[in-house]
Amino acid sequence: MRLGINMLLWTTQVGEEHFPILADLKTIGYDGVEFPLFARDDTRYERIRAELDNLGLQCTAVTVATREANPIGADPTSRRSAVDTAKQAIHTTNLLGGMVLCGPLHSALGHFVGRSRTAEEWNWCVQTLREIGDFAASADVTLAIEALNRFECYFLNTARDTRDLVDAVGHPNIRAMYDTFHANIEERDIGEAVNALAPVLAHVHISENHRGTPGDGLVRWRETFAALKAARYDGWLTIEAFGRSLPDLAAMCIWRELYDTEMGLARQGLKFMRDQWHAS
Image (cartoon, rainbow, N blue to C red; front, side, top):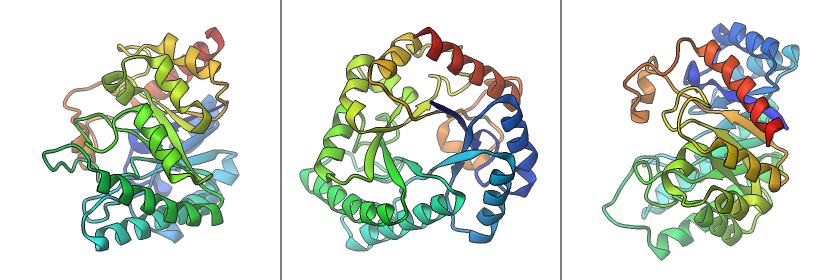
């Protein structure tokens, strides 16, 4: 089991000015960090990789699809852009030394069309992810596909649908992620949701229902950790929390203070994950 935290708690683009934060996270006991990847910048990420190696930190990465680069877009140009954009993120993940790139790589974040998904969109997604999977395999990166709640996405909302999509793609480098925040909104049974994903589960986000410190909200944590243990999950548990200080994350709808300090959340969250895992 490896314990990580998403750098989106501090920034949407990690740079050398964040190296002291990386050092502090290593000192308090994290195995790694998760980097948000929204633009290619090889020089920046080569420097970050060197610092990760210096600190002995591992990493994962997260990215999203946009309306202009949409794996289920009706315009073939949009689907081609989705492939190219995903390839850039995979390249950067590999450059950083990461082996898992997670996120809602199935469809554009926050884009709605006033209806449910169609069979044609499903097929477009399968085809697009297969092509991305081939490139991911060449970079030794696994994609962990994330279902989102219905207020952020109409294409993929549940663990069962995520498993069906991964099975339809049928590529060893296309797997699934479980996110406790989205599951808290969409799932009827935590155990069933985790069990549905278990054979293809590659990553887990630990995120409270209010997006603040894990453990001081309403997520069914005891059921969650018990289900992950029963599934013999042995990958990353990565905290995903957000604050009000990042204008780029306005779409996350964080309008109030959720914690005292970012590092305080990191400390409490790390202890919480360890305690819950050992107690399950």
